[in-house]
Image (cartoon, rainbow, N blue to C red; front, side, top):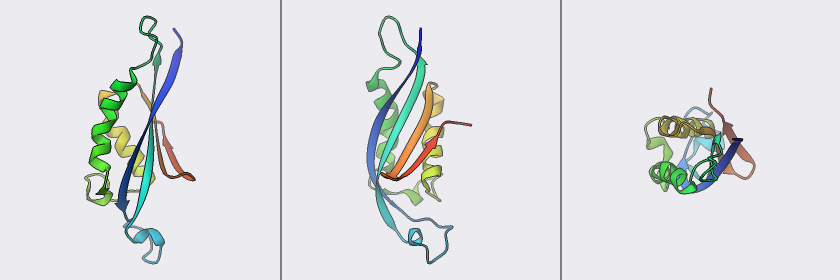
Length: 121
């Protein structure tokens, strides 16, 4: 069967600051984003069911993590003390991958033009 990739998009609002930038950098101050996260999985198409993974199953894996991030200060979450988009993508990957082996990519968008894509090591 062919290999296919599916993705699901999630949205959350959070505040953060970047602790390692220069004090006069605008991101050194507390600010917020409406983040968009895309979670991509890739696997063989199931010939009977006709899908790679049920979108509801994908949602069940991701939503508990989104709930941990939504309307929070990201710096207060273990592993996100320096909550760049890159570290957020890595954090999500590390949380998801053990229970979602088909995970192929995590995309974090701070806004429409600031995007991080992580596809594993």
